[in-house]
Length: 295
Image (cartoon, rainbow, N blue to C red):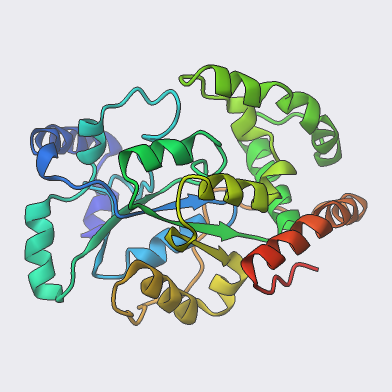
């Protein structure tokens, strides 16, 4: 089936997906909201986690699954989408009940967007719509995360500055964006999304913002290095959090997003970032009661 799909023109798949969406909209009332979200962090391993999750027979990807898409972007400020549209991306309760009979447990649905933890308005939106939603946050050593994020922006053609220059310009670029976002619920800041290389690695503030709207037991924070080093054990911990049985994974190979990180950041810049993040990482480790080997 995969080989056949690869030979089908993309426009044909898009037409098929659009037709399926119309049918899904008609049955939206029978489609529960997702049970959990993967909320970040950007360049933190969300692609690998997504692919590991959908290997589990009791974890359902988006419906239909359009070219491996992980997210609907429903909670983005400018999505303009209805709850009916959002529900149309998840499997029906009827299907889930049938699958539950075969599995012996209720299957779960989800989506994954690294922007969901980063936009401080989104946690409140999720809590208002679906307060029982669980969330998983992947956190990666923030120095290589920042470099990988920068490389992605360069390859996307939206970052003309060197890494050092971009870090120096970050505060000025982001200045006033939070205030604009707070003042206008429909304002999606591409500046906030694209250029927070340093700040997006300051994870604790983002976690605390999420926990203003959800109890601690509904958030799982995982170091991405642990996912790659001990994949099966880490996915067993994820299963425990989600309340589904353990599943022996067919493959534990890492999955990379489209963009590839080249080389390494200049050592002087990396050293400055390590010094910047040291107190942030220590505070995060203390908050989580966990060891973070990011020295």
